[in-house]
Image 1 (tube, helix red, strand yellow):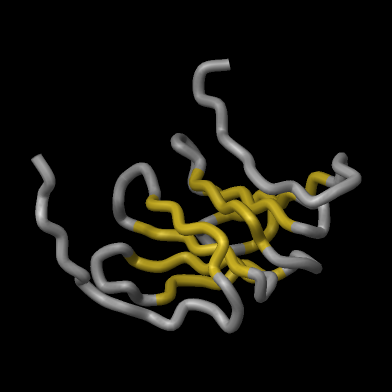
Image 2 (cartoon, helix red, strand yellow):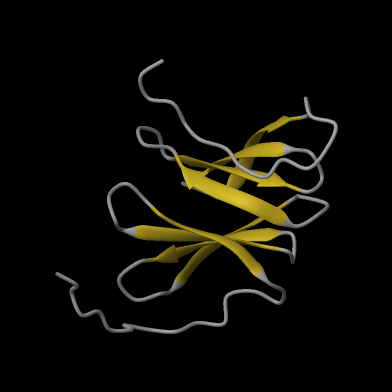
Length: 111
């Protein structure tokens, strides 16, 4: 059986196309990634912008919340993965091991 849904809010999130939208494991935050080279963290209940992640040189293809830590990871057309701290939206680490765009990523919780 299908459940009816309704739009709670609409926001203009980015200046270019949005490539990904991910909800945090606790359902309190949403992260969006865009061709404008940014990822943005939003409050899920009101849609208020909490922080913007800047540092990629090309569009962001994937953004994921860690299931256990207070961080997110982003992937991009610049062949980089970046790990970000949610407390202050700073980049903790940049992974430079790829030679082409990184389109997806996942956190592993059980090895």
